[in-house]
Image (cartoon, rainbow, N blue to C red):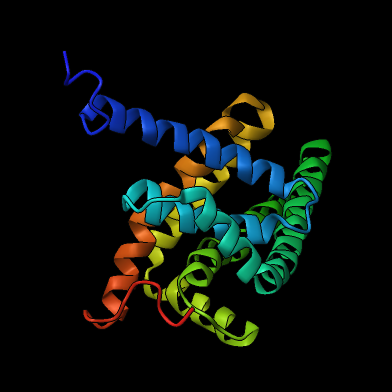
Amino acid sequence: MNQIFNPENFFWQCFDKMADVVGLSLLWFLCSLPVVTIGPACAALYDASARCVRGGEGSPYGRFFRTFRREFKSAALCALTWGTALLLLFFGHNIALSLARESGSRPMLVLAVAYLVLLVIPAGMLCWLFPLLSRFQYSFRALNKTALQFWFAHLPSTLAMAALLALCVNICVRLLLPVCCLPCLLALAHSLFAERAFQKHMPEEQDVDGPS
């Protein structure tokens, strides 16, 4: 009977993880509502998810807010730059696809496909930028250069991360309820790719917090 109420048993540990997944997802959603803060919220969500939910460290909400404040400027600028590129390509794809359907124009269909392929560039960059920003401290130029290097050096991971991002965004746009858990689950899924890539580029003795 004592084992049932033991906070260290498997059931309560799973419950704590699930509660953190929901809590961090909702926190990310609330912090992203002003739109201009979505970048810092993404960096903070990744850091808290990878280090606390997955890594077992304590105080996930404290870590979230520390990362949010620390990386606010860089993360907001990254989100504005690549988020704008993503939206422009997305709208270009929708317009070209709509024209292709209405007119049956093959060139428009090819253009729509081209826009869709190009969407992978900003989507993949965003998938690497926030994990990198949560671990290390860069200038804006160095951060983007490093993210681009990871984009190409780990192309299969980039494509997988971008596909997961697109899937989660599509689900959350259609059904609001998954926002309660999908953001944190996506960050955890991305951490499987990102943390493995980071380990290949860091000395073994270096702390995972890096120079931040």
